[in-house]
Amino acid sequence: MLRYAAIDVGSNAVRLLIADISKRDGKYKYKKNTLIRVPLRLGDDAFLDHHISERKAGDLIKTMAAFKGLMDVYHVSEYLACATSAMREAGNGQDIVKQIKAQTDLTLEIIEGQREANIIYANHIEEDLDENKTYLYIDVGGGSTELSVFVKGVPEASRSFNIGTIRMLDNQDKEETWDEMKEWVKEHTKSQKHLAAIGTGGNINKLFRMSDEKDGAPMSIQKLNALYNKLTSYSLKERIHELGLNPDRADVIIPASEIYLTLMKWTGIKQIYVPKVGMADGIIKLLIEEKLDQA
Image 1 (cartoon, rainbow, N blue to C red):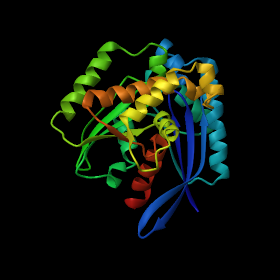
Image 2 (image 1 turned 135 degrees about the vertical axis):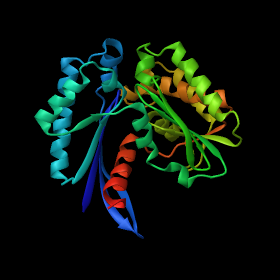
Image 3 (image 1 turned 90 degrees about the vertical axis):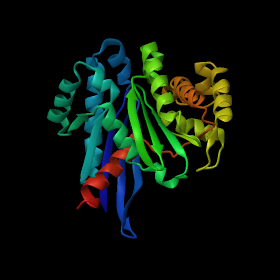
Image 4 (image 1 turned 120 degrees about the horizontal axis):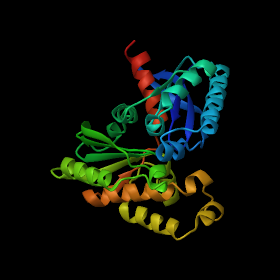
């Protein structure tokens, strides 16, 4: 069995996805084998202090060493490890990358916003949707929001903005960044009709599960707004104990909802499709494209 691995070092959590690769009808497919998520919250250090503390850096190195052990046990043949917004902003990000290499022999790449967007879009979600529609692709992370406009299945424009859930919780989101995002999104969607949204990221996946919509069906802005109002009516403790949210999801789900709702209101979008994929899935798809499709 051919196995690939994706490591996503995000601002809220660090993920390892191990996937089994197979060929069917002349096309390479992947099936998720193992997914591990460790909520390290690197963004708290990076956005407030622009430096990742020794304790969190140590936790990240231990996590990467554990991932390396699992990848060896699963006989992973190819991997790609990417770090996003928190590691981009931490002054000691590259030093931590060197320590990870020295202690685990894993190569971690700190990627720019555009490459992050390209990896997420490697999922090619737009292929399964109505090509007559225009889609605003929204990926909300802990440190940044990646936006792209797809017209007839082709990405027309994309941009990364420093607005994310951890950044908002730490009051490190700037009003001028919101203004820039509003201007950009209006500029790139104003001439488009039949506009819908595609949402990726752990928070929108959770919101979609809470909505009880059928897989593949879009979630309406009314339903998303109702969920947001319900969540904000509970305290953080109640969201954990009564709604059963993980502690590291119960706080970030509120600012995430605000980002999705704001973007939908700005553009007049009424529906959002939630395909349950993210950065780690994009990395696996990218590896397949680079290692197998082009072989």
